Length: 338
Image (cartoon, rainbow, N blue to C red):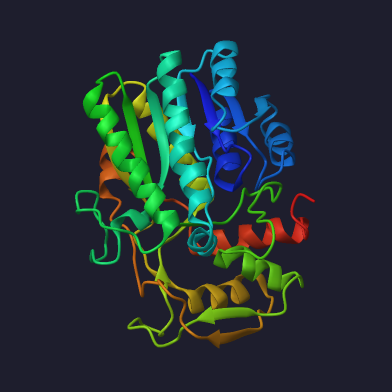
């Protein structure tokens, strides 16, 4: 049993990971500035697990706040989710992304070093593979420049953490590269609750289903894919959360810096998501085809063999589970946590 600090732990993936950590018998401390999340998610995690966690409202860019946290809680390892994550927004306000994501991660690593904590799991992204690698993506492929500033920050942080581990062998770092997380906890009590217009497909679909949005726009139907719409590797958020538990447990005993893809390895089209959602949940999703979006790749998906071999992890939940659980969350919480 370890004491784990989860930055951004009130967010979508963070809250589900807190749940799995508590279920696995770990203690959890959450640091979150609530800029794109709600403390209500953590109340529900505690109610569902019948276990308590410590919540600190604060920012990873605040060194004094981090120092106090590390003094008050004997932290064994850190899972680092905190950051800004909207691709489109990152193109409009790049400096904010550089400050929150890159400078924030530097601030966190410095505070960890001051506190003598060297075990870290970083929430990275498949965007670090760039535009030119063929799918399925494998961890040893050369990384290339992502076509958006959000992905760029993930690439910079990954490279920075790799260099840290080379310079000081006390560091033990996991880079989890994930694909498209969807779904929600089976209870429907916690789920994805974006503020404003959703940037991701799934909450947009569920908000149309619940009547908060008029219709779904599918960007581009002339891609070189089976049905002409973009294909992505969708993964259930609970499977993803369990991968974080295995990764942090692995880092407690290993050293160096290691990357793992976390996906299903199955490309699924946007149109198929819409059609399967309708079939599974018996609800219609009005939609239109719209022009392609800048920077959208036709298709990408993961090779997850390394995570299976080294972490003993694999995705267990199906596409139908993802879509039923997303709808169950949205139906019970039409306005999210508000």
